[in-house]
Image (cartoon, rainbow, N blue to C red; front, side, top):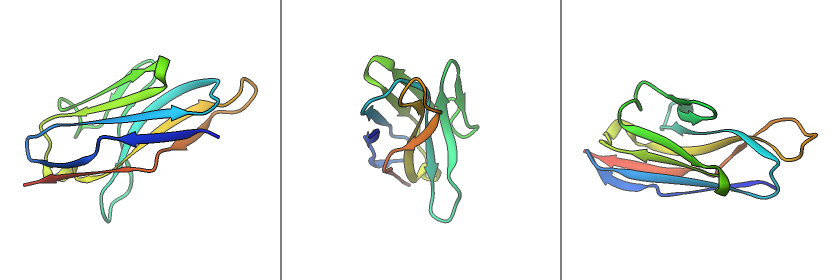
Length: 119
């Protein structure tokens, strides 16, 4: 069984920083993509940043957030700087991976970590 475990959320003031971590465990053949989504109350889940051979950032994340990966540890990070109240959401880690060489690519999700930015 593959598990994604997130950490690093919390309460921070406007302009502050947080660093989210997500570690994938279990038997994994290869991880293709890893990324971070977020979902605010009453809104759809949206992609914030993703990393495969390149990186992607949403418009709201560009210039403030940085995604990085440690492939040896199957871990992805999201450094969030200059946080704003509109960044308040539950942040979910996502990994698109193959468990075995013969298996298809599947999506796996973390349990979510709350980020709250106070004004």
